[in-house]
Image 1 (cartoon, helix red, strand yellow):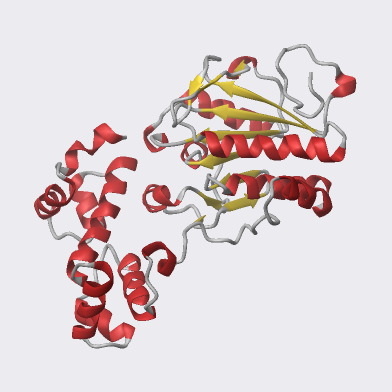
Image 2 (cartoon, helix red, strand yellow; image 1 turned 90 degrees about the vertical axis):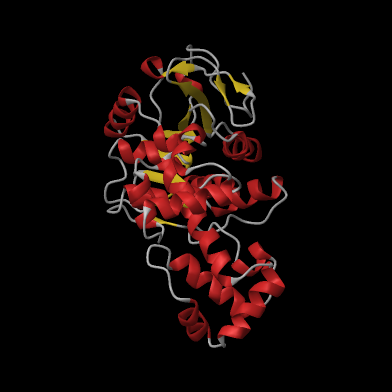
Length: 331
């Protein structure tokens, strides 16, 4: 067994070689492979740089079978949950579809392991599973930005943020992607100091870990490829007022320009009118709610600023090419 890798491939272990911490990665069908691999790379490099077996890890699935990642590659699970060894840290790795996943046995396993003293966390959309298991109650948490609004709709009492990761006691959540590297570098720094974490970051040919207060999404100017502060402010207002849309005249007034200037900015930079762009923002929000919550079309219409379900359906069909009630097939 490689001292650098630290992976547990067999049930047999020698207690004299057990590392400081034993990590378990619970793989759920459709999990993002890049985030999962990034986390393990940090642990492996911490072992390599330190010259010690600081970490050991293995993978777990509900039934012990291999699990298909989002990109179609299969990862072999070392354990099924009922036979898994005791872990210091458990990370739930989920991707698309986690919002509608229900597994009472899995949720009970997570609760039980947490009661036994394990730190329990998630990557990407795994926060849905932690929330359903009751592990996020009263905890700061985050989730991939695409699921954030629907997650907040489903769990309005949870303090869900848009940060790249959150650590609150023995619970941690991560938005996924490259943020997994930042989270695990922070865990290494917490365990063994900033110097080791910095040396691991150097091995990854990157800078130090981003702080947990870093926002997931790019700035509006970068995301849309615009440099007009007035236009960026107008789009930000639209994204902040979805359930109760602002009038175009109010947006222009709040931004500090005339209605005609606002029209010109949207036409020149985004190729559409402010009204049409605003509707697209609300339709994308509606799509996320339909795919990731149990809300009815009428409830989604209300939460997305459409006066009736029929009006939402009409706009939805025109924009996406299929009616809102067909979104179940994408979940």
